[in-house]
Image (cartoon, rainbow, N blue to C red; front, side):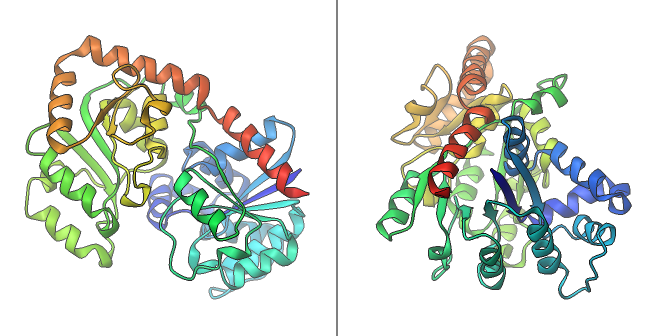
Length: 361
């Protein structure tokens, strides 16, 4: 199979990436592309690397990365201007790759013209969707949707859309890059802090009063999240807020953390399974996550992770395990062993490829 991952990366991440590696903006396409893969942002790069190891052809196309894409255009004699570069370059790359399957993680804003043009190149356009979906988003155009939420799978199927469950996973090769990072952060939280994460923000505000949690998150700089930003400034949250962190730097923070605090978004309802569960355990940090009906199917409570049902219970358990180093380490090690054995990208990608083969025909 020839599989093309067509993905959009967060604008905030791309800005941070080129601030960390300023020389890359003028580097070759291959140099920039390799650096993105080595930063492990999200899952598509890990899937591409694993698919290649499994004997298939795969490529990641970060269609909204201006420096990367315009460099490809220069090297491949594609003339673009400031108004058409994003779609024109990506569509030309797609035509040249000649994929059997296009797997997209694109902005819902691009489900119009861009998705229609991709479908002209390959009728088999699959998508990853694991977050809030805008009303009237034309997801019926897709041949298959993969998601980490069983709720989403059920809802898609009720509406006549092919959908399959693909849990998140951890890329073991991340450990090779940050193996020497030592734990020096008692407890951390990393994640979205926008208006759609209001329940999470209110929860964190109560946590910071009682436990030494350090907070990294994105969304506060966006104009639509001004109310959340103002809330942060008015209480202790702003003292514990460390800014945004992305890619390999994010994984370093998790690995430095004795405990990783996790809380699903409201759309998850009563089902657990976000990426942070696998990232934190894979990096050897003890996971403290919100209690859902399926948590023990993922990590056993009290043995591989710790779960809470309320703010008070979260504070109580965090306080306890910060004092009980041996117990905390035992749980963290057990969680890590489970993730490295069961929730690794090779297992995850093999499952993805089975779905692709099933829906390719």
